[in-house]
Length: 185
Image (cartoon, rainbow, N blue to C red; front, side):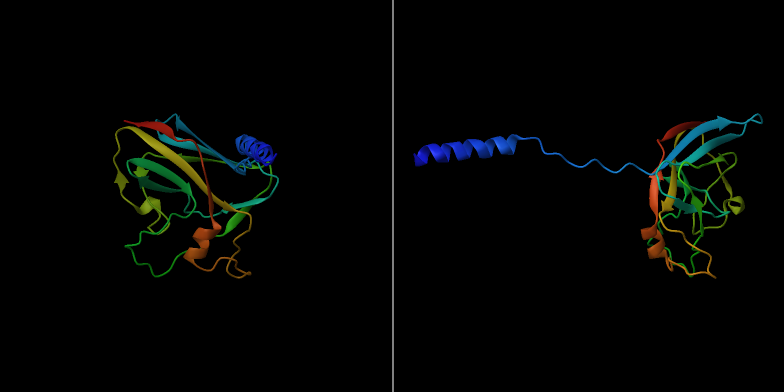
């Protein structure tokens, strides 16, 4: 009798172990970012960036005249509406904490980023317009990313929720678009 109970318990346990385990779905990205290569009537190579809040919440994205930044990542380009991490070999004295603007649910922003001339620059460098042009030829992969959060970053006169670079990088979520290819002459 004990052998039958043990066999039944063993069988029951093995059936439970084989049952599919439901894992919760990963939360959907609340910010949809898309990038499309465009060539203007004047032959200027650019990327059209569309940023859309597809969540039910108001999101906060950076509102800086210096953005987007154009960075090199390996041999690719990154169009970044956000704050890039700091090179650990670089010492900085001060860091701008950019303010944000609200992007309500269902709202979208569009921008066109010229790649001609290609001027690179990030959060810790001179404004892109003041950097020398970089030559690229042939096909190049371009990524687009947008930094955002559920809470705003207010001007310094108001109560500030982010006080330093570490807090800024922790505050920022990044949403990325599918990579695209652009063709430089």
